[in-house]
Image 1 (cartoon, rainbow, N blue to C red):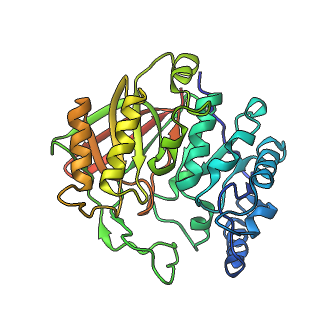
Image 2 (tube, rainbow, N blue to C red):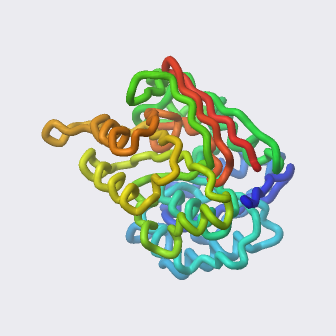
Length: 335
């Protein structure tokens, strides 16, 4: 059975950096975050938030110790890292999985490797969505702001989210009042250009990093299926940060060979700017090849990943994703 945290009103949100922290020129972000959350939730910042050296906020032991402290502290109600990075994998074997109790961990990019590992190891739901740096604006767009409502959904409750109207194709030099600069119309797509409905337990994250869990004790999908979801079918949501088309294809084939796509009812890919061709092979070809391999519905360019805004996906929840005519919905039930 999946265990669902719930975010209470006037919660204490802990910010720690299991991957990258804020370099000194970005320290003012913490002041903006405090101001944004004032009267809403209390925010406390760990030491790793303020450090960044050689591709990470601190050494693996320092990051893991602070992460464990925040996740186990009874006065901290949720943990939201500042953003992703590159090397969260270094500290994954130092997480105190056996003592974890339901507490929301929200993030994406490199943080998604921690999200998925925690859900697979413990059956505790985790949330893939915005990071806290992107919540420092004067307000949030209608898609991003759903993180709060999702995290306050009670057990046995359900919540629906809708595809956005526009997305950001490039990170702006100067953030807007809502941080992002939406410059392109959102259009979800399907491989076969037909409407899609898929249902199952949601699992996923940034494929660049989560595929590294395969074959480790932190990616034991078979155990998760038997222990926590009674072998129910899975829907995978995946986003690609920087994998070129052939690299993405190799990752997807690895997932297939490892059995991660067994008893799968569909796959949803987030938007990516990695579309260019290698010779004559592009990202869409990789999606089509996977659809042919698995005979499954596949949709892509959904609101997930490094081209915001992002729908908040809850690992372990029961999801229903619908797609038609460029638009889509996702309903998540906390059962």
